[in-house]
Image 1 (tube, rainbow, N blue to C red):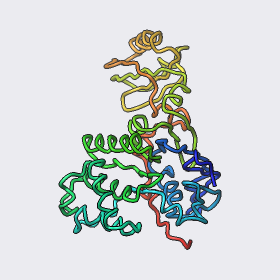
Image 2: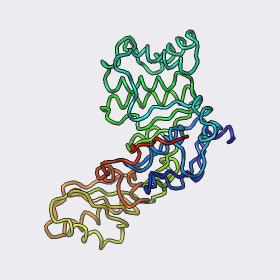
Image 3: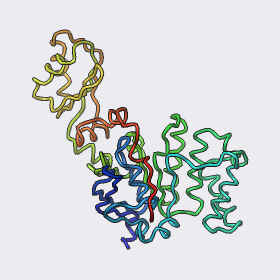
Image 4: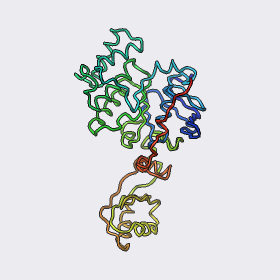
Amino acid sequence: MVSSEIAISAEGVVRRFGKLVALDEVDVAVRSGEVYGFLGPNGAGKSTFTRVLCTLINPSGGRAEVAGFDVTTQADEVRLRVGVALQEAALDDQQTGAEMLALQGRFYGLSRAATQARVAELTELIDIGDALGRRVGTYSGGMKRRLDLALALVHDPVVLFLDEPTTGLDPVSRSRVWQEVRRLNRELGMTVFLTTQYLEEADELADRVGIINRGKLVAEGTPAELKRAIGTDVVVVTFEGPLPEARRALQRLDVVQRIDTGDQSLTVSVSDGPSAISPVAVALSEAPGIVVQELSLRRPSLDDVFLSVTGERIATRNRAAIPVDADRRSTTEPR
């Protein structure tokens, strides 16, 4: 077994779907009581890795332990100790929230009294309120997410897996889910493994972040550490005019370390932002046909970290994702 201080341990985890390598030698160690953000674009392998850790699929190679038990040889022990809320909640629209929570308690062998007590705790913790008495089919998207979270918590798990819990939610509902995750971690000391493609979500919630790209773990650390490691400031320019002229004007500057191109915008990595603003502005003003509309300075973001380690932006990868996501392919296999 792993140390009691380590809630999740993965060593060299590989997962193949035919010739496709969805996970390529992934190593991760998550401490007990930590919120670990697993960040990457669509198709990067986030959900596949989560399914391996939750014992829904076996790894093709390597090994992993959750709550001290091997996910392949001790799958039943792992399942008793984890709560899982996947991207697509398996909710019955014809049942009420209360009925689903009671049924979940029975699945885990809780007595009627223990289930009722636990549901009372969760009603307050997850802020489900009077909706428990209504059929799930009447719930909003945000309410369904919170019910799914409550179902994952009925048996008081050691580790909670949240697979893109706010995908498709409006900003208000997303903020509510963030609040619940913080409360679970802060008040219960629960270990949370959170997969997300939202940069601000990882930045806001995670104690540490692992960045996965094309099945490989390419960076890991606290959000602050990852952003500091870039060692640059960022100047963002929007303009009118020919893009090649704008690039050429900036490439001549010694202060410019990298130029990333967008739609009529440039993201310019510089070593010293305050001193670089003026040369960048002057160079663009002197470039033929270029009219600067806006120029701003900001600190690096996790998207800049992703760009630094992969050569592309996570938002661009999401837009260009292939129609069939490797994370959602059929995973049925004999155990």
